[in-house]
Every structure is written in C-alpha cells, then in structure tokens.
Image (cartoon, rainbow, N blue to C red; front, side):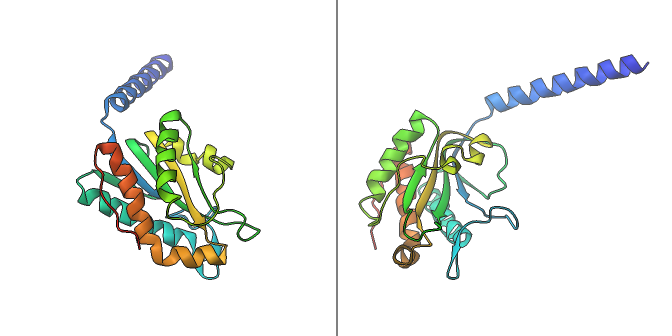
Length: 204
C-alpha cells in the first residue's frame, strides 16, 4: 500500500514537472520587462544612499517612466520589482544607480550575459555617452553586473543591467536629479528600436 502511494505520488510529480516545462517552453514572452532595482526590499541589499538620496526611489521613478513611455508607443511592458517572478521576455532592463565607498570613483556602467545583450548594450552606450558627461566603467565590471540575480528569473533574449550614474558623487547626483525622466525616455527610445521604432527624445 505504502509503495503504491509512493509510486503514484512520484509519477504525479513527474507529470506535473513535465507539464510545467512544456507550458513554459511554449509560453509567449512578454515584449519588455522593466525592473526597478531594490524595489520592495526592506532588508538585505536595499540600494545605495547618499545625503538623503535613496537609490531605490530614483530606480522607481526611472522604471515607471520607461514603462509609461514604451506603453504610449504601443509596446507591451511589464513592470516588476526586486522580488521578481519567473517571467519570459524579449527585452529586459534592470534600473540602478551606483554607489561607491570612494566618491566619484564609479560612474555609469552596464551588465549583461550574452552576445545579443552585448549588442543592445553597445547601442545604449552610444546613446547615453552623448548625454551623460561623467566617467564610465567597463562592461560587467562587477559580479553584480555580470551575474545579476534576476538573469535567472527574468529569462530574456536580451537583458541589460543599467547603472545610470553614481549617487555618492555630489556632482553626478546634482546633474542626475533633474534629468531622471529624460534618462528614462532615452532608455525607452533605445528599447523601442528593438521593435522597429525610432522615436525622437528631446534632451533637457
């Protein structure tokens, strides 16, 4: 009797696992997923902070604007927080601002895992380097960029982790603060080119 129950339970688990795998394999990916880094976390890595500026607050502002802009252009977009569910996407972007123990030693950077993402990263850098007037780090310069935890839950064809500047650097923080929505619009416009759109963004 016990053997029969065990065998039935094991068979049921195997069938459920196969069914989930088949469902996931054929599930249509969401065009774009936008994550605000650290959003929803009360403990652990809650993001950088400096002189009253909380990284997570800026991440949310930028992520919301990116999603809003993409949706206004007719591109289906899902907004997620740091406690990201398992989801499939064509393009995913995680929004962050950096912090450094030595102020003004970091700057902007980008992380990714595959060659398709690298091509999108180069496209983004061409756009942002014309606007962002401070230093850049090389791609994937930290493990948090090259091995970002959400790479394993947001399964995207192209996934970028964007560090948009250093909030622990006074001159960068002052430059960034009034330009968050413009930066978001530049991100949205870069993503939009992946879907055949080429919107013009007015720089402020």
